[in-house]
Amino acid sequence: AVLKIDPAEAAALKLKGNVEYLSGNLDGALATFITLLDKHPGDEEGPYMLGRIYYQEKRVDHAIGQFQRVLKLNPKSYKAYDNLGLCYQSLGDIELATRYFLTAIKLVDKDHPDYDWAYANLASLLLDKGDPEQAFGFASKAAKRNPASARNFYIGGKALSKLGKNELAANWLERSVSLDPKYPEPLYLLSRVYSELGQAEKSKAALERFQAVKKAAPRERK
Image 1 (spheres, rainbow, N blue to C red):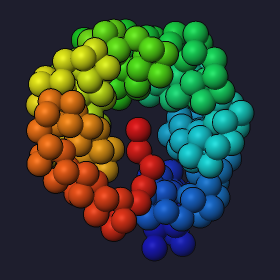
Image 2: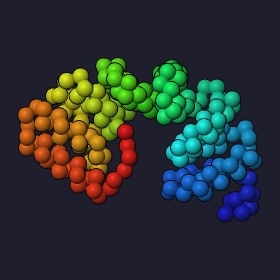
Image 3: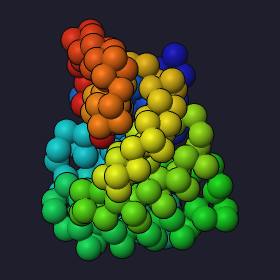
């Protein structure tokens, strides 16, 4: 209704675009945020959300361009740095991805104590790189910042399992499962950890839960 009166009203465009994005209407969200960008070129939410959508659609070069545009508008946009890290990680440039994650972490360290994504993203990258010890350190910081995130505890549990600390890994993975019972990856890893601990019944139960969750709601998550 607001946009019928004023098609360029920024707050209404942002709300409309975010609703479209969250409801899975990516084409609609793209169109809305492009309109926002055209009408309000100095507003950083337009290019930020365009970058998020382009990244989700695997149009990584387009995403990078939008996040860089955000940084021209706001050089302290920690979310833009964090997302640039994800972009370069997907391109296989681990060194540059690490640099962007660390820049985001530096910006949020004291000023944004609730922001955990950069810590978790760097922890995940370090796991892929084969450095579970450092990965656990960053996962621990992510979990401290956001103890309600199942992903943070999953990454921490995965790092601990790679370090051979299976009892601790089980604790972290159990916490992950309790936070999000429909998150399949922690259940699968928990089954393996229980097996290595010699807890066959628990391993079987976790595997059955994993299979049920995967069948009911398959989804891709790290």
